[in-house]
Length: 57
Image: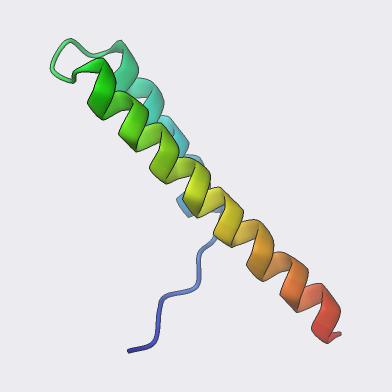
């Protein structure tokens, strides 16, 4: 199964969600940290894909 290409917008959205969760009383701090960790992983994958694109040129 092919994975969708991650864009800068996806990274920004992930960090926005993590920030909102941290501020919200509906989320525990543990869940907010999990969202932040997920955003970090998405960002790392985005950067890795950008690096591979530059290598391929």
